[in-house]
Image (cartoon, rainbow, N blue to C red):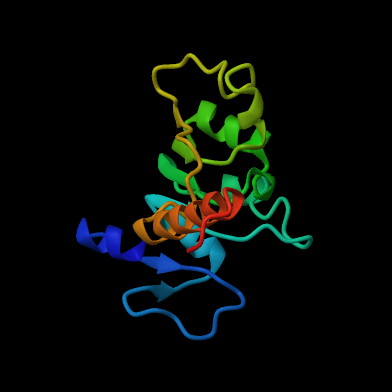
Length: 154
């Protein structure tokens, strides 16, 4: 993600309490500073038993007014009611997510009910792992299963 941002001239900063060695081009900062000063905040975290609600109402309230928030992780990591409040108040300028907890019932959720032209909320399909390499692995595996099913020799 940092390489994409850098291609657009963005200064890329990050927060991770566990990462010791940081990739080139990413400045390590405290979470509060990251949230308060970033125009774009992207979340890339695995859901674990310890981190549901990682970004709650207090953290979302710290975000720079008008920032864009993109969650590529899981909906359980975010207080979605607080996120909606942030969108409706203008604290958060836009939201992009492939993984809202409410995505199975879209658009009957509160996100789908937003009608304000000033509120932007996007939920493209979740395609984690969809890369040329991943597709090749899946195609090769599937073809092997078909061959096995029909009893043909490989």
